[in-house]
Image (cartoon, rainbow over all chains, first blue to last red; front, side, top):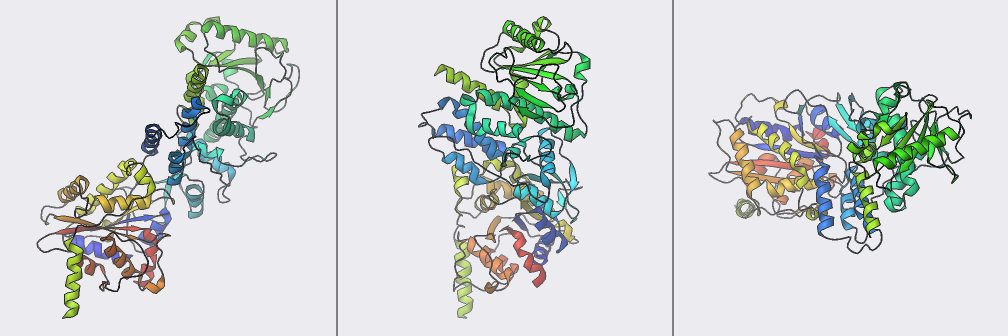
Amino acid sequence: MDTLLTFSQITLSRGGFFAFVGSSLFIYDFGEVVIQSSGRALREIKFPSSADTMEKKTADFVSESQVFAGAASRQAEMSFFLKVALQVARSSPNMKDWNRIANSRTKVEIPHIVYDIPKEIGPDYVFLLAARMAFGKQREKKFNRERLHAVVDLLHGNADLRPSESNNIHERWPEITVTLSLPPWQLLHFDFEAQHRKFPQVQNWVLVELQRLFYMDGPTDAVKTWELATMGLLELRKAMIQVNEEKNPTLSEVLSGLGVLTKVSKTILRKIATEECAANSYQDLPEGSEACDKPCVFYAQKSNEEGVEGVFRNAYEDLALFFQMKLYHTATPKEISCWLQKAHDHADSLGYKKGSYVVMLFVTDTVVQNLKNNQSAWPQNSMVFADDAIDNLFKPFGDGLFVEMVKSRRRQKQE
Amino acid sequence: VSTIILEKRQKLSLISGRKAILPVGVGALRFEGLHDRESSKEDLFQGLEYLASSRGVPELDKKEVPVLGIAAPSESGKTEFLRWIFNNCCTVSLNAGDAANNLLGRINAASPPNVAKLDRLIVLFASFNQKSTYNIREGPIVVTAIKRLVRSYQGRTDMQGFDADDAERNNLEDLVNAFSEEDKTTGFVVCIDELSKLRQLNSSA
């Protein structure tokens, strides 16, 4: 190697021009071959550069070539599944995944990737990397070859070399400091066996519901899945903040940045998330007097649980979070007040004391300003997740997925 | 005498025609080229400008002559990117267009004023990926690399056998001589897919 590069050096010195451009599967190969063995330097060409353009080009190709024109069923959902397929491809540098989408003829083929947890890094670290990327908190760190290999080659994450002091040239090896990124979508690319928790930070149901929503049900069949996935996202957000901040966040911190409209006391907002991750249950909703020692999402099974879908117990100290989804409606401010009141009434009827619970309402097709104008009419300790807030909740899994779901539902109604 | 004539003929056959282009892969064709690599291309151009700024500097340190390197997992389009460089950045290529001439202009602009401007930029390509592995029976890897680079000029990257009429080119000087043209200053960009395979050069050098 040094022989070749010496030639380049001599040619340049004499006024000629001779440059080497090389590719390698692994940044460590450059480290070993170019820097360590040859005493030379590397100037990095960042690669891949931008998935955005490729995503746009694929979408344009799909749309212009009308490759899905023959898709008779679930036409309304085409954009949603395309968005999901692109999101998968976006998480993978593999050109085959892009081609597979473009090759789909009568329906969108979602590239299905299943990873194993690499033994070099372990599940807790996989989750941490995804959580960091979800919140834009990637950190520079020194990594050995095995760990880099696990993230970059086995999980299709990305490693950015630390910008060098001058001209993007790297001369030192093996002191490689990189910033690792792992798209949160990668968390869905595992087999979630029953009885085994894949990641220590969340129970499997959180990711299983999302996986089902994105890969199988879609907006049409996702009546319940959508609701469960939304609650799962709330739990996932808590867990991601937990690992990023290395402390249990308050309810206020979990909601921060989402754009949730709240009429909730400060005491409640300051309640701290429970260390343990939440289970889910399909039993009847527990009454207020029933003790619950672990965090758990209870889904209402009885038809007479009027006004609520379920209750999230003990997620934030002893607080009960009643939730109601109205994701298939165009919600007016008046209806919202009415739905909130009904949920509060039901919580009261189950024996929950005022101040011990909050009602969370998820609504679509609303005008936020109208909601704000009507906020004073809501019962105390209520919060509303309108379109923007739910979309923000979905953000770790890609911009606009939620919007696409709402649009699909609308199109479906029109068809 | 016959050997000299043969070598001259070979040299003429190499430099007289326009350089062939390499076929691009399905992905690149489908998406009309690697348009998503704009910032990677800019990294490349800036790297070449950086090297050009060292032209004619007598006390050039080895650290000042870096390899321009792309590290990425398999199937992420590295080979396609190198092929793009080969097809589009070479001024003697069959389809040489604005990209090649702009790059030549940038290299010349970045070069110190006391060195000759480049008239031509030749890009060659050699692959050592899993589809074109190196076998030790081929001889020294540097000779293999040079042969592959030379053959790429004709658009040939197949590794099935070697031409009987391949001239002996054992080092890069031979390669430069083969492609040089009188009264013209020629610059070279050599693209090597899976450069790390040349690690064997370290032990054999």
